[in-house]
Length: 553
Image (cartoon, rainbow, N blue to C red; front, side, top):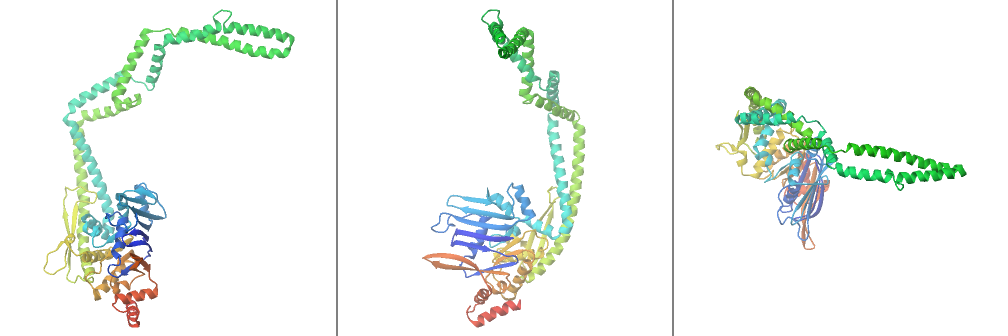
C-alpha cells in the first residue's frame, strides 16, 4: 500500500507530508484548495509529464517522494530491473527547470522503469488517468482475473504453446532460407572443413611453433651471445673467470694451511668452480643445438602461415577453429538432409499450431462464458452507481491466426448509459466521472482477485448526490476491505465512511499562497462533514447532522 507521500515546492505546495492508512482514506477541501495538485504529485512521481511551471514560485526545484509497502511481486519486478529490494519501495522524483531525476530505493532510474514498477503498486483513476479501463489489453486482463480459477492454468499452457510454435517457425524459416542457396553453401562448407581437417590442428601447437620459429630465426645471435659468455668464463686464457677462480682457490688453500677457518672460504669458491664447470658444459651443448636448419625453419614458417590463416578466418584461437569445425560439420549434415529436416519442421510447426489453437480455443470459450457473468454482475453493480438503465457488453473477437501468449482473443468493453443509444467502446465515454464510477464498479467485482494494493479515485462523485452518493460510498468502503483506497470527494455521504480523513486547505502567508494538508481528529472531522453538508461547521445543528450521518451508515 501507499504508506506516505511527501511533496516539496510543487505548485502551491511548499512542504507537506501525508501518512496514509489501510482502508478508506478520504481527502476533502474547498474548490481550488489543491486537491488536484496532490493527485498530480503522485502522477508526477510515477512518470507523468511535468509542465514548465510546476515548480513553486521562488524555488529552484520540486521534489515528490512516495513510500510503498514492499511485496513479493514488487521484489520480483525490482530484481528484474536489477534494482535493490528493501522493506519498502521508495520512489522519488526531483524536478528542475532543465531535467527530472528519478530514483527507486536510492538508485537513479529512467521513467520507463518507474512506470513498469508503478503498474504493480497503484491504480490511479482521475479525470485523465483511466489507463486501466481504456486499454483493451488491460480489459482482457480484467476479464481473465475475474475468471482466474478457470483461466490461470490455461493462460500458462497457451503461453507455453505459443512460445514453442514461434520457436519452431523460426527454425523452419531459417531452414527455408538455407535451402535457397543450399548447393553453394554445401560446397563452401565442404571446402572449409576439408581445409581445417587437412591442417590437422593440435591444441597449443601454435604457441610451441611460434617459440621454436623465434628461436631458430635468432639462432646466430643467440649462439654469439652464449659463446661470448662461455669465453669469458673458460676460453683457456689466464684472464678468464675460470682461471682467476682457480688461482683464488689456490691462494685460499695456502691460507687454510695456516688457519683452518680459512678453509670455509675455500669451500665456497670450490662450489662456484663446480657451477662454472656445469655452466660451461651446458653452454657448449646449447650452442651445439643452435645449429640453423633451413629446412626446419621453412617447415615451421609454412606451418605457422597455415595456422594463422585458419585463425584469421575461423577463430581467434585453435580451440575456436576446432569449435567452428564442429558447428559447421553439424550444419553441413543438416544441409545434406535439408529436405527431410524441412519436412520434419513443417509437420512439427503444424502440430504446435494445432495444439496452440486448441488451447487458445478452450481459453476463448472460458472467456465468453465468463463474460456473460461479468456483464450481469457489473450491470447490477452499476445500477447502484447512478447508471439505472445501463447496458454493458464484453465484445470478444477471435483470430486463430493470431499467435500470442494470451491467446487469439481481442476484447472491448462496450457500454450505453442512455436508453435507446447503442453500446459503444468505454474509451469513447466522455465523462471522467462516469469512467471513474465504471471503474469503481469493475474494481468492486474484482476485489477478490485484483493484485494491485492501492487505488486512487478522483471525481468519482461528479454529477451525483443523495442515494447514489451513498451507494458510491458503500462501494468504496467494500473495496477498501481488500485494498487501500484513496478517494478525493466533495460529498459528505462518501466522506462519512472514511477510516482516515484528510482536509486540504489553501492559505495566504506573507503574501504567498500555500496549500496544506492535515489529518482530522474526531472533532475536526465532524466540522468538515458539517461544512460539506452545507451548514455552519460551528453550529450545533450542523454538527448534529454530521454526527447523525456517520451513525446512519
